[in-house]
Image (cartoon, rainbow, N blue to C red):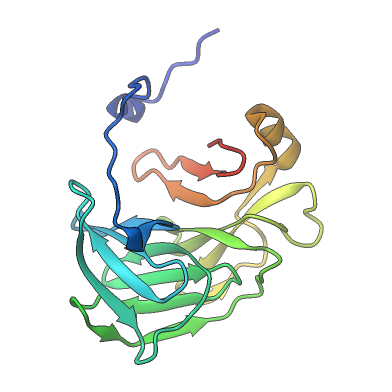
Length: 209
């Protein structure tokens, strides 16, 4: 039997064979993370340096860029999230960088929060969850001890500034990998729909959502 689509899905034309595409500049050839501010501006970041870009989503052009710290930190940056005036970058080793938006060419101060996650977990997705005031971190690889047959999404509490030990979401590897037919489902991005509360988790090498 057919399953009716949620009403918010009608805003997306998933059957369009030629959807609108934007060609980003070379600086963003690997746009590991995207986030919208509350006033509707799009931000992305460099994948190896703590540099944030504001991008015009209508043209793909860079509006401005600013850097973290007096000496720009290096890392494998994999996601960006925004809560009010605060911005966050997540690195694959589980480190979270907290800072405020800067002007074009400006260098901004930042804080680093070290979590129990590591390169073994390989954080590849970051999203702000307003309902729980947490950052959601999607792990591409190891889900943690006792969760060998799953992929995990952990929550970092912005109130307590620490990682919640128990995973927020657990995804059974066998069920999602079997459906994709393109390889194992290894999360590389996460987003939460603002009105429906639905989580969207993407796997690049599994070519699936």
